[in-house]
Amino acid sequence: MKAIAIVGSADQSQTLLADLLHWHGLSVFQVDSNEALLPLLSFISPELIIIESSAKTSAEAICDRIKLSPVLSHLPVIICTDWMTHKGNADAYLYEPYTAEEMFAHIQALRPLTTPQVSDSAVAQLDI
Image (cartoon, rainbow, N blue to C red; front, side):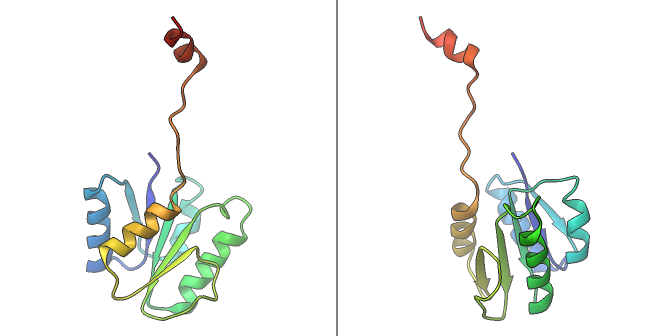
């Protein structure tokens, strides 16, 4: 299973979000700053990125860099913030205060659907 990246200051709300996602069986890694995320993405490929930011320009800037990258543009991005906008490149926005149900609805809608891969030999074994 791929991880969900949470980017933002390591405050109580980010820790609670990470704990909540872990509790629901999702793998999470946390990055304290937007600038630290891009180098990390060369080693870890998350299936979704959540950016928690109170600074509009910072969250939009990192989202723009992800969406303009030919390697990273497929990654869905959720921006969680206390300012209202729909002008950015994020796939979804959550405005504070938001609920766990709202967060999970966005995650569920944006996570890539995966189907189990069955090898030809496994299929052949089923044909009796």
